[in-house]
Length: 194
Image 1: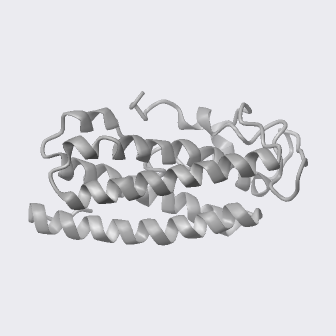
Image 2: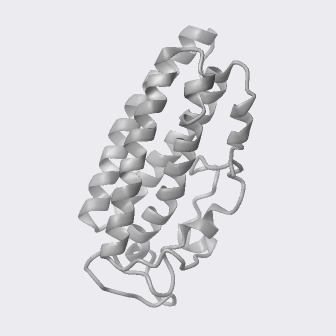
C-alpha cells in the first residue's frame, strides 16, 4: 500500500477517452487528437489526488514515530490540508464529468517522471526509519518539490479556475513548508538537505 513505485501514470486516469476539458460542465473529448493543453486540468487532478494521498500516508506515521513536536504538528497540518484538497479535486472532477477510470499513457503526462513528481520513494521505510524525523524530511521535501513542479505545469497550461487556484495554494504553502523542513534538518542533523 505504501509502495509508490507502482505506475503513477496508471493512477492518473482522468485524461483519455471520455474526460472533460476542464472548461465547462459536462464537456467531453475523445482520447485521440486532443491537445495535451486541453488535458491539463483533469491530468493534474488525477495525478495530484494520489500524490496528496501519499503525503497523508507519510503524515499518518508521525504521531507515533516523530521525535520532534514540530514534525508532529507539520504532519497534522499536511494531512488536514491535503485531505481537504483531495475533497475539492474530487468535487471538481465530478462537476466536469472527468472519468476517474480513464487511462493515460506516459506521453500524455508531458514526460514528467515519477521522480520529477516526487513519487518514486517507498514510504513503508518510514515505519522503521531511525531517526524518523530525518527520514520524514528527506522524503517529504522532494515529494513537496514534485507537487510544486506539477502545480507549475497546471498554472502554465490549465484553464479550470478552481484547479488553478488550488495549484497556487499548493505552491505557496508547500514552498513555506520546504523552507521550514530544510531549516530543521540543518539545525537537527548539522547537514544541508539538497
